[in-house]
Image: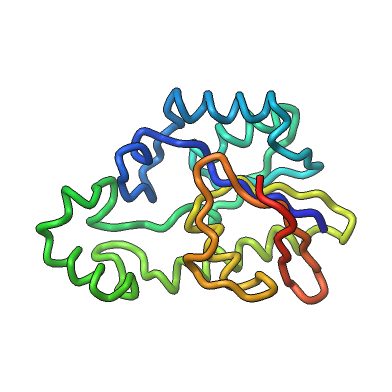
Length: 192
């Protein structure tokens, strides 16, 4: 199966280095402009089937790249709930004891008042499998999702194995992959 995984375009929160999870923020003008320009230059491969996170930043990106597609939505492909860190950046959080503890744990502690990282990764992986198991090996499927969603999927299914932080695409970028439905393994073929 040809699988295209694309991270949504840039939002204002992304430009400010904010933890952007459950905040349903649209693309900023620069983010939309980047997607449009890259699309015009042929920077995105075609796809027969397009899936998206329900967040407007992903849906807007999907519509800009695949304007004629009937975009399907999978709720569990959404980004992590960062709890009390939501929509704050490093500078705003630097004096927060919970934030320092979370950073010192290398991100293994749950987000205070938010989602546990392991639960988030498992949610994304299960949603990914629900989507890809619908199609046969000849399908061309695009997923327009979040950076954390992509990292969760790749760290579980990529062959050869990768770590969670090994696949952190920039906004509007991603990967063209081969997905083997039998082994449920992803092989990255090229960057988008």
